[in-house]
Length: 90
Image 1: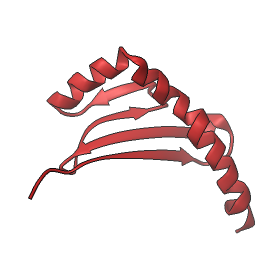
Image 2: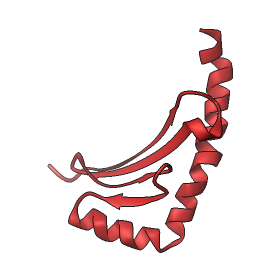
Image 3: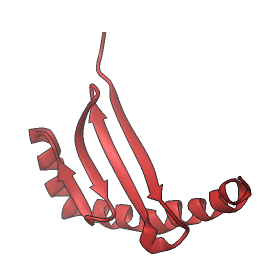
Image 4: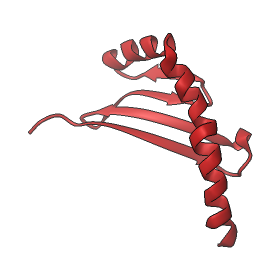
């Protein structure tokens, strides 16, 4: 019994070019997606009443800038490493 809160950070890509890479950050409560950020959209989107209110607040604060920077910091960097060490050799 209890509640489950989780967050995922995902990098979608089909090449190492920055334009072909997307960062998606999703928040879940009891397995229901409540809010997410997609670098292709550039802002948070809420899927529940609670998620909509958080998306509005996060889009007006420093959270949206941090998430926009995650594509470069996390995805572009790691996709390049993954591609060189694994995908290019297979």
